[in-house]
Length: 93
Image (cartoon, rainbow, N blue to C red):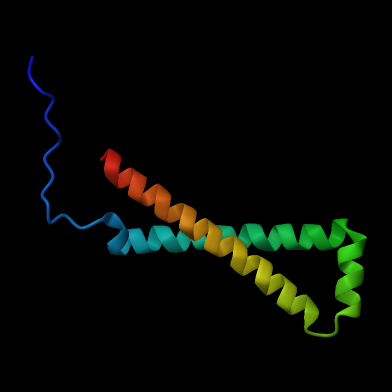
């Protein structure tokens, strides 16, 4: 029996993550995460009166800090997930 040959890949081939297309894909994942974080944050504030009460007593900057923290957390998580998806897609192609 013959061994199955792997696809032709040059050893110097750069990952698609380090290319203009990869950077755009990564930014797209981060922006989708930021949008999802914003929706989640506003839903949490509207649905949970305890969170709204904490933000009311937190001062003028509490709302902004809370929203920016949540949006940034979601954006970083989505960007890291995007890295995994892009690198996994490289292995399959």
